[in-house]
Image 1 (cartoon, rainbow, N blue to C red):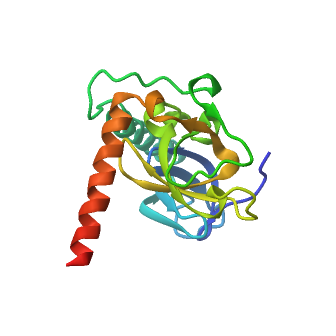
Image 2: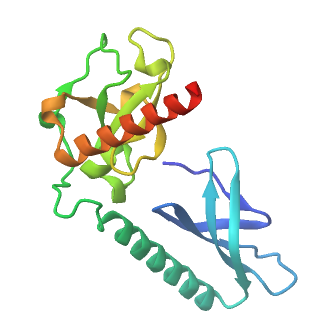
Length: 202
């Protein structure tokens, strides 16, 4: 259990929910002299620093909680729309398990391999195949017997870059195991890489 007290300025965060790309927080400052003991805001963090946007403060606790609930609902709907409006309609999207991939061994080099991230590593809303399948592009964790653990990846569904630890990897997908959408995503990534190399060579 994490008992760390979070602060947003003079406000202590008493409730929070992170869904999708942002976190909604509710804070209190019982010593506030301006009649704004409660606040609601969106929080974005890079792991080192947190930024609070769209801050609304007031002394009416039920009203601030109502705003908090509305923002959570709006963020949840935004995330749902992003997740369930796939680029390729009707694709299977159930979470992948160890049965769906080749188990990872200590000697495996993950560089340029398609890997599957353990579902429990991801936030609940992202525990699905389209968020688990990545192309590992490098990192110390990609190399066998390395002291480092970072694996840099490209999401084959969205094309976004991300970083995971080697221990987060469930297994490897062989070419014949790739679902069609992931195969298309891999082809698209390779084409972009080739085009970039050609432009650099000019």
